[in-house]
Image 1 (cartoon, rainbow, N blue to C red):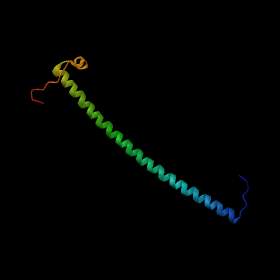
Image 2 (cartoon, helix red, strand yellow; image 1 turned 120 degrees about the vertical axis):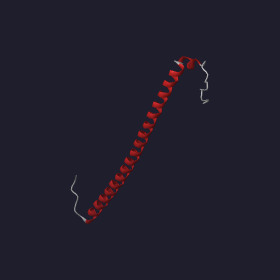
Image 3 (tube, rainbow, N blue to C red; image 1 turned 90 degrees about the vertical axis):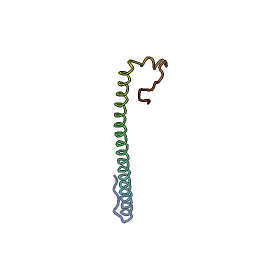
Image 4 (cartoon, helix red, strand yellow; image 1 turned 180 degrees about the horizontal axis):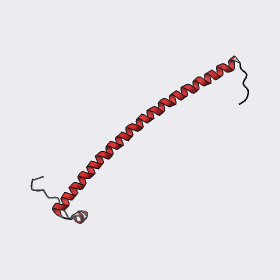
Length: 92
């Protein structure tokens, strides 16, 4: 960097640059904090969704296992479209 003469004018210029840099840094810090909060919210929402998907998958697998136990292997009939739904003994 070249020599800058120590005049009052240069002092005012550098004070203005320092103030602008500090306010810019402060603004970027606020923005980074806001992005961190948003990221944590997204991460929390993803974790909750994964948890609910896990319980749903467990329930679905258990239901499939019950159906296969009750009706045998019916996957081929479902794929062909020849199987129709029937009500159980309890009417549901």
